[in-house]
Length: 378
Ligand SMILES: Cc1cc2nc3c(=O)[nH]c(=O)nc-3n(C[C@H](O)[C@H](O)[C@H](O)COP(=O)(O)OP(=O)(O)OC[C@H]3O[C@@H](n4cnc5c(N)ncnc54)[C@H](O)[C@@H]3O)c2cc1C
Image (cartoon, helix red, strand yellow):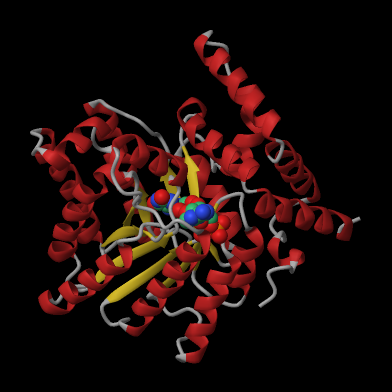
């Protein structure tokens, strides 16, 4: 497998689209441009100036569209190269009943699609899309009355998914309320994951308690005879979590070094592969070593490349070199494809920009590869 094969990585893009991607990456790798852009956005939003014309280039790079209909041609395009799509209704920080119901209805629409569209293998949602985050936080120390209706919203989604035999991924978020989400998802895995993994929880392997939690889950699945669905990620909120731990005077929940997080991630995957009869594995990572680690493990243990219990996933607009080269070798690959009204997905786009401006090397590699492919097409 050659993740530097840019011809395969970008076959789905025209030269014009490659240049546009290069433009985006050049901008977001400059921290001062990101800070400037963020300030401008805040002012524009405050003054109610339409932001779409100014953010369109970013939106097109990292989002599939403003609604599900707009995502479909994108997923069809990726599907031609065996890369599947997971439409992700990416509104954040909602706090009202109508917004929760809106998310439920979007997730159900995606569940319907999974049954009829071979390019869409999963549905997904974020736990804080269904409750006010503040209530979730309060519920960890004191049962909050809002949690009962929160559980019902989950059940509405999972019952619908189970009826259609569709798997649903649930993202992981902040440490301070993840415990409550873990409890809820474990209950629903026991309820719905009898024949197949309908409910997928997420383990953030930067957390120093997750290998133990994984052992606990596997023991539980063996004992109570249900299937685990687990998405593995390293974790997206490190700085915030470290600061919170410091401010709140509790031990930092995250490994102190990157190599420790890397080792925990790879270890978790190994544990799952050894217990594959109990767990379906979804790898959400842009780390080429971790991907190769699993590819080698699968080869050694004689798994078929497209074993349906193993998935690889990257975000739309990022690391196409991994997604498309894996897919060319018949591995199961899906892109998270965020969508939603431009204004609503802004926090997501800002995070993508900040992340790329801070981890110089990965975004730098994207630039090198895009340039290489543009030159190849000359
Ligand atoms: C498909 C997909 C779905 C995702 N879903 C979620 C989700 O539900 N929840 C979520 O939190 N994130 C999610 N993420 C983001 C993910 O957690 C990572 O932030 C991101 O993918 C970068 O990590 P990486 O594995 O790609 O590789 P790398 O770039 O190799 O790793 C970077 C990560 O390593 C960790 N790290 C960096 N420095 C240190 C350090 N000094 N000490 C300890 N750890 C360190 C951090 O987690 C950092 O994000 C998702 C990512 C993808 C691709």
